[in-house]
Length: 172
Image 1 (cartoon, rainbow, N blue to C red):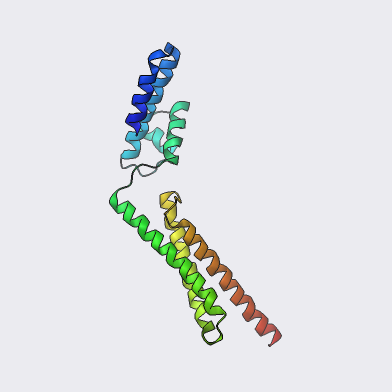
Image 2 (cartoon, rainbow, N blue to C red):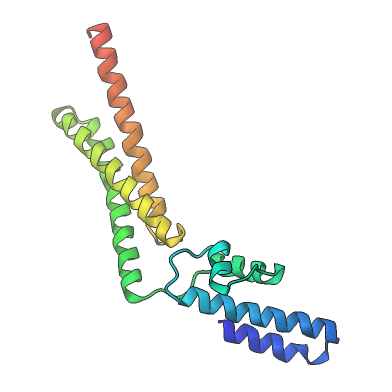
């Protein structure tokens, strides 16, 4: 992607003034610097980390390019993709457990089963949402389904706790 941008910028620079051409050369350099930084095994992909990587302060052009690259992450490895799919399944299970808890809560014979289902939905939702942060909460990372399960589990536990408190206080 960086090479394509650089070629396009370089090719379009033919009819520009020397000032515009210099600006485009800086942008091309910034693209290649950011690309090499993000492809290295850097621990933190931050502007400060990038400045440390380069050994100097970033120009405004480099900061702008870096922010664009942060918004559009690089291609993932097969292991990263598999981990993201696993997290997506975990988020889906969180949501399924939450909805199952809602259904079982209104069936008198098995209503007690809803308590562990709500707890399981809450725990798996927390895990899924926290892991989805590793993938910038992208679509398909399990963030949405995990958040749904987390909310259902949390609200369900609060409803059960409120019901228990009412029963104890009112003696119903």
